[in-house]
Each structure stands twice: as structure tokens, then as C-alpha cells.
Image (cartoon, rainbow, N blue to C red; front, top):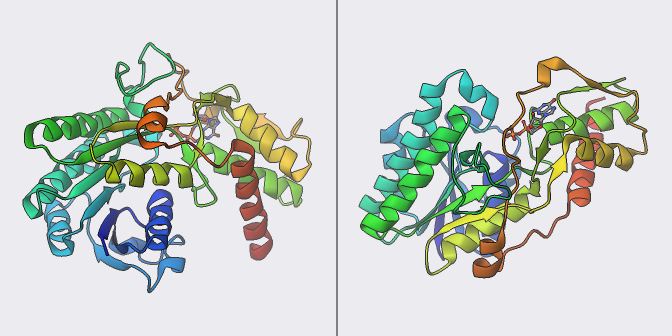
Length: 320
Ligand code: GDP
């Protein structure tokens, strides 16, 4: 039975990845911060996975975890995730993303040079790429400290692969959502708002730019891609994205349609949530993942948003 170590198992992606690996009989160990032990995504995994503690800002704890667990497969998903927050503390962002990736990769090589590693990088590495859609070879000009840190991690992966022959793959993940997504990200904010309005718990939903555009995929599809990448004979970089551009307004329309409420007059643009416009349209080209790994998204946009709204309705009813 192969053993996998998942950093960030308490998060959206880590917990879905654990579900997927448990299904195929993999022995799963998760790395968590002490304070995440009671996190909502871990409850259903209790007794089915082993948890070890570690902190991205404490390299010794990461080395100890990798060395003690000795996994066959290491999925490094743990990272700060909210892009705007990276402006508040670029130093910590770089340490927690680039520094921790470097530590994890070195620990993997020291523990077992044949250990397979997957690291989640991000579409934020493209920033002002100047071309759209973006594939693995597109220019990378990040526009946030988060993007800079992810690009450092991304380039380190390629370098170590070349230098040491390490089996490390990078997933260039575009935005991905699910019923386990926290509400400060706009899709969950919208599904939660639509659910609350339909239940009469809230009158309006305050958002930023409704024309802002992203490429949204379901998190369960993205973690399936991670496993395919890690288990492929040859390591590489892969864009995981839908390849379909959508706007915040598309999210609003899908979520409100699901609850049968007209969003007109219910959605208010609030300057507090408006961010500077992006110079390059962020859109993924997942051709390589499809051709090399046979990967493509299985969960469509409307289904994903519908499931998120249903989860919000259930949670709000249970709370009320
Ligand atoms: P990000 O792509 O990782 O920053 O994910 P988010 O879900 O936070 O934001 C996605 C897009 O939605 C960005 O272009 C935001 O500017 C836009 N957006 C519009 N209104 C909102 C809002 O109220 N909250 C958030 N978080 N984003 C918003």
C-alpha cells in the first residue's frame, strides 16, 4: 500500500485529495498546524488518516514530518491562499510559500531520492503575462507578492528536477472552488449570499467588480489532476483549468438562478471589494494536462455552483 503525505490536509484541496487517495487504498498521513486539528474539513477523516503537526514557517518541523513519515508520495498543498492578504506581509508570504517549498523538496530528496512530489503552484505566477490563454510556457510576470512567491517555488521545482533528477511535478492551478471553499473567496461569498437572500436572512449582497474574470474549476477535478501528475512516469508542469472564461456576474447569475431569485436590486457594488483591474486576462489552457495525463474537468460550472448553494442552504438552515 503506498503511503502519501499531504501538507494542508485541513484545507479544501487537501481534504478532497485525502478522500480520493483513501478510495484507492493509499495510506494517508496529513500535515496540519496544531490549531487546525478541529477544522471542519477534517471531521469526516477522523480515524481514517494519521495527522502530524508542522508549520510552514518552521523548517525543522517540515523536515521532521517528511523524515518521520517517509512517504512514497508527497503532495505539498499547504500555503497561505488569499492573494490580497499577501500585500500585508510579503516577507511571511515568501517564507511560507517559497521557503517552505524549498525545505520540503530538500527533505524529500534527503529522505528518499525516489520520493515523488507534487507541489501546487498557481495561475498567479502569470500576472501580466501579455498573452491569454496561458499555458505552461507562457511568460510569467506576477503582480502580487503571492504570485512572486509561487513563481519562486515553481522555478525551484524545475531547477531541482533538472539538477537532481527529482520526480517533482507542479500544478499551475487556476481558481478552484467547492462546498469546502471559505467565504472570503468570491464564489463562496456569492453562493452564501444567494442562499441567505433566498431564505430571507439577508437583503443584499455587496461585491466588487462584477466584470472581473477568472477561470473557475472544481477543486475535486484539480486534486485528481495532482494524482495523475505525480503518478505519471515523467514529472512535469501542468495547467489545471477549465479553459473557459467567466465573470463574477456569471457566478451571480448561476447562484441566483439556482435559488430562483432575481439578482437585480439584490447585488450592490461596494468599492471596498473592488481591486485594480488586471492587465492580462487570466485564463488557462489545459491542453498539456489533457494530452499527457488524460485529465479534463468532470464537474461543470453550474453543477459546482449548485452544490455550493445547496451546502450553504443546508448550513444556514441548520444554524437558524
Ligand atoms: P483570487 O483570484 O484568488 O483573488 O480569488 P477571489 O475569489 O478572491 O477573487 C476572484 C475575482 O473576483 C477577483 O478578480 C476579484 O477582484 C473579484 N471580486 C469581485 N467582487 C469580489 C468580492 O466581493 N470578494 C472577492 N474576494 N473577490 C471579488
